[in-house]
Length: 409
Ligand code: ZN
Ligand code: ZN
Image 1 (cartoon, protein in one colour):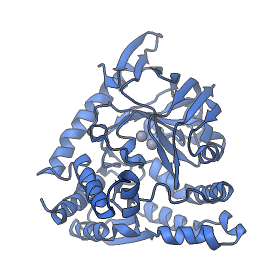
Image 2 (spheres, protein in one colour; image 1 turned 120 degrees about the horizontal axis):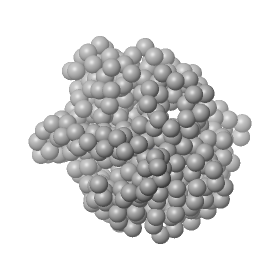
Image 3 (tube, rainbow, N blue to C red; image 1 turned 30 degrees about the vertical axis):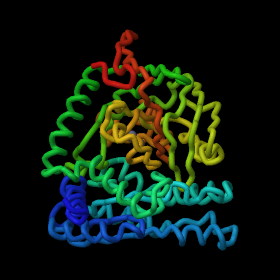
């Protein structure tokens, strides 16, 4: 297939399998400026699927940098609450959401960490009403990626830019199955496999997971009434969608107060323009009490200081080391891809759908079961070919779940 055909197949996959956009639905897209060609194709497929209106909000890296270079100090406590409130209103009115990732992983490297922390906090606070509808799975939504020049340069630093972009697109098409003859059918088969895995895990009702590997000795309690999810799912508006393309993970809610021990990151994490690498943390009663990072330590420290829940876990996900994304051998410096190449954990907000009947329970009930609450939700990778994971049954018996990074079940 030509690049044009692949891009079109990918756009169609996002609208059909990713969003499963319904006739009459509005669609809200957020995208980097460099993703215009992809956004136009998605917009076309969205209208063909019956969308009533497609609205795109573009992010421009140069404009973001101009703010850090020239804006007055007080500007860093400001966020466009009006915009995020409008997005939340659109979602409540039935709009679907498509986020296109592709940002420069180290766009804000070297900027004042205090300004970064203030700007991120202001943004997180203002974004909360919209984020809650997303993490609560109120609407059908999807995250995909576009190969932008800045991102491609960071993934393939040795290649000329055009070649780097081309290679990154090829990797994206392969990891998302967009290069297969029938991507929609491939996603149905993939979902069936992930659902088999979640059914097994939900039947076992483990009370904890135990992780063992170099630099890692961690016991991670699971929330009461936790529920494993993976692959596509039905949003509360009744639409079955695939929220992440690609996705290889099965994931659930840890208990926010029951994580003990040490864990080491296995891949770099790109967070709001900072690249964070070599993270080591120690948990006590669910909370991070010690942390260091070889790179981006300030950014990680400010992330986990956002609020009380940011130093606790909101998600635990298992991904075999042989996942197609991991096999590509590429470190993407982008969470959508890297989190699907390795088992991971996330600090911050947990997903309501990871608690049985979560959407019917109050915030207090969810907290009592161990679900975490925070302005942030950031995944980071801990899986590798050296990681063993046991599931701890309700009576305390351990059983092998993963050995050397692969499923043992
Ligand atoms: Zn995840
Ligand atoms: Zn996550």
